[in-house]
Amino acid sequence: MIAGIGLDIVDVAGFSAQIADAASAFVHAAFSEGERQAALCHGDRARHLAARWAAKEAFIKAWATSRSGQPPHLAAVDLRDIEVVQDPFGRPTLILHGDVARLCGRPRLHLSLSHDGAVAAAVVVWEVEP
Image (cartoon, rainbow, N blue to C red; front, side, top):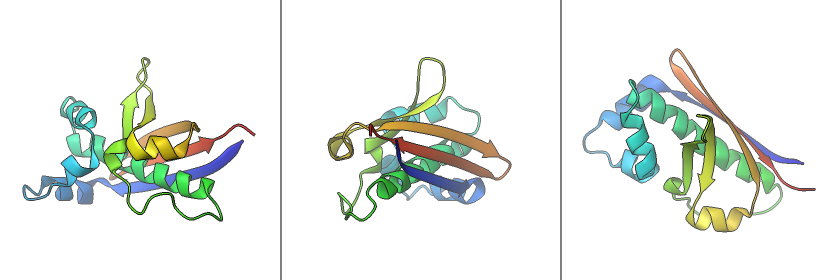
């Protein structure tokens, strides 16, 4: 049964400017070591990370909609606890860690990433057993 859906769209140019700021700790605060390393292997680091940022935001939205009528579990989420990885076939998937994993239970998560021109986007579908 689908319990939640989240969608997020990121402007790649604006995101690129944000992560280019040498004084910003954003990349280290928002992305796991694995995500940061994977981004180095791609031709366009900003575009790669923008899609993963959209996935994290889409996950939080799906989590929120799955809890309709209930208060949030956490006042703040460590975004590194929401990690975008590739499955053995190269498809993006989400792995949850820490408090996020503990509080979410065992939802089945579906992730789709997209890039088109100036934007990166992600959709997360949150599925639970009926």
